[in-house]
Length: 276
Image (cartoon, rainbow, N blue to C red):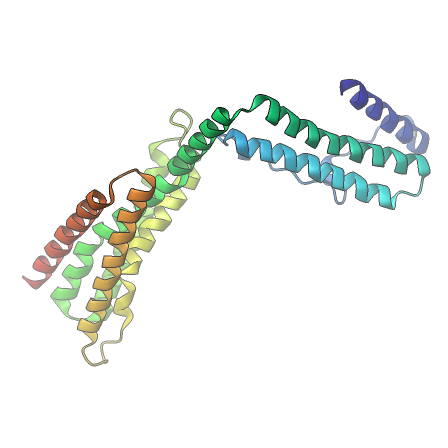
């Protein structure tokens, strides 16, 4: 394989020398129209092995396709022949990749990689998203329903809910991003985790705040909005319990009891404070 690569490199340089002279012009990959695009190396950090193998295979396929397109546009016979040879060589790399996987990757190793990939997915995306959704859905209940039962008006209640949701989202996003750089724990990019956590926190609070968009002039507007907000809270808490049961290996009944009980306590506290 190394001898073939060396021969192709020598042929490529010979063709270049005959057409353009002995001096090599500094040409980068991005200077060539239609060249294969590759992700920056830093985007591949902390990626599971299966994802890295898929990236390698995709690069080889893209390089082979590029050489075929270039060969179709070449006017010189030698250049076209060389480009087709390069395309076949890149396609051969794909075959070598699959052969090496079949030889050195037994079923036990694949199962272990799948477990590691699931763990990384949970650490990078599910855990920060779940933490944000729990905080946004539960922590904003008290101020929102306290404002609702203190004013019995939808517009000021909506403003309190928006402020609490967005403020909690910004706070949780910064807290998650600054708590761990991901290097030692393997939890992934702090910016990604912070963005996910902050966004889910804001979504969790906005879900039961938006029903208070119901105009105050509508008949029974306050109770209509409150009933809708209560229904949204119910759905949010059950969604949190399902995610915990699905990804955190928490028994469903235990997850429901913990989340629904905690949410009910916070909701009751907000109502009692607002009605007092």
